[in-house]
Length: 309
Ligand code: CP
Ligand code: NVA
Image (cartoon, rainbow, N blue to C red; front, side, top):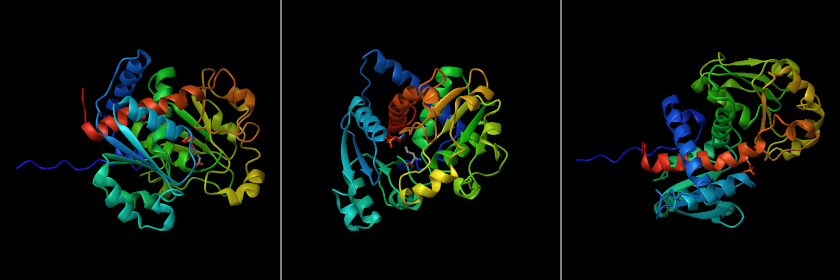
């Protein structure tokens, strides 16, 4: 008797192994090459992706939606405001219903426990399109972008300047799996928490009080907004606390001469990053944003069809 294969979800970066990432990153490069050559790549004809947004988005929506159409499939877009999700239908019931009608679900929501609750009742793979705790699709795109520009990230140093947020947590998970180091510098009160980040040890990261020291010798300098979605009530306190955690040309100067700058976007020039840095020659933020689409196409294909090469 044939067994139904277990559903593979992508709820956090640690849901895939180094070997699976090696496959996905190679596959994403192939998919990107075909896209650039206007060559059709449609392994997901007749498949449907439901996208559920409980927070705002530009890149995540466009990259998943355009990506799914390019793969031959179609999408359904739901938000809290225009669905029963905003009227307190239990997440478990929503999962049972939605996953009977589509092949794949992408969710952007608040607590990680919410997406986990959805996945536990879903008949189809669920992808994390950002939660308070994690943003795995973004880090997948960031690593793909690093490799495109500089080759393997193994053994390299990534400087994280700013909030100990969903992006920082996901960088920590990635460093443990892919063998690089993260230098983390956050204002006090906004530190990363190893138990929230869900990592096994502190071997792959180092904490620095001074953001300049975190950037010294780094191969990649990266940051994010001072106030993530859902934390807007803390805006004023955060502005005061984060004033020194602005990536500037001095920080880039102490990094490696060929260091890259990344930001998941949206960015606030003059807050977490100086315009000279994000609009300067070391910044790869536009490639980083575009690559969301290519890596997510590889991810959707993998979750639904497994390895194809
Ligand atoms: N980086 C990112 O996830 O962007 P959006 O919030 O626009 O989707
Ligand atoms: N940390 C940010 C990322 C936005 C893409 C947030 O959660 O709002």
